[in-house]
Amino acid sequence: MTDQNITIENTVEPVVAAAPEVAQPEVVQEAQPQADTRPDNRGRRGARGQRGKGQGRERERKEFEQATIDVRRVARVMAGGRRFSFSVAVVIGDKKGRVGVGLGKAGDTALAIDKAVRDARKHLVVVPLTKDNSIAKEISYKYASSTITIIPSAGRGLVAGSAVRTVLEYAGISNVVSKILSRTKNKLTIARATLKALKQLSKAK
Image 1 (cartoon, rainbow, N blue to C red):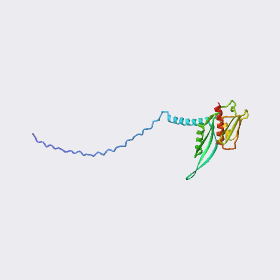
Image 2 (image 1 turned 60 degrees about the vertical axis):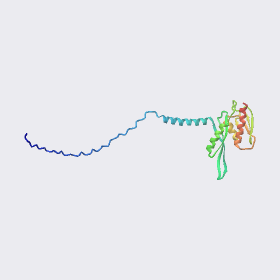
Image 3 (image 1 turned 90 degrees about the vertical axis):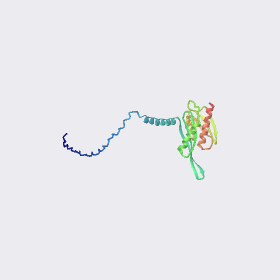
Image 4 (image 1 turned 180 degrees about the vertical axis):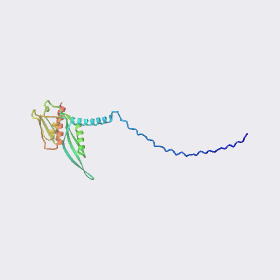
């Protein structure tokens, strides 16, 4: 075996350090909101709700008309001084035979009127009317310091004054003549006396 000079060249390959890869920022596309093709029932419901509330108020107004006949400021003496409130008398009616008188007290005028209307609804009187929107017979009533007389009179129209006229008008009564046979000027008392007088007709029926 012949010795052969074997020259082994140590080839050292240069190691080149790889540059670190820079992470590219990922581009995230924002999801565009899809158009909602469903019918917007919420808006319609809201509109319907508002429409319903409005219609309810209109129905209340159409059912009964109201008139304020007396507004008083009442003072109550308290430990810290005087406390003021309002007392309101209201007449409501549909001008078809139904009429009521109510009284409301509150610190605000609007709130007192609302209370008076609710009180008047509790004291409604149904009056039987004749064909010419009059009453069947003469009626008279005394309430507190007020004495009222209502006399049917064909073709005269409504002849009345003070709170009697308001009550009769909102009850839909015409062709009558009324008289206040007392010196009181308390409109609430006069209105209640008129209501009590008209209540006699409903009982007679």
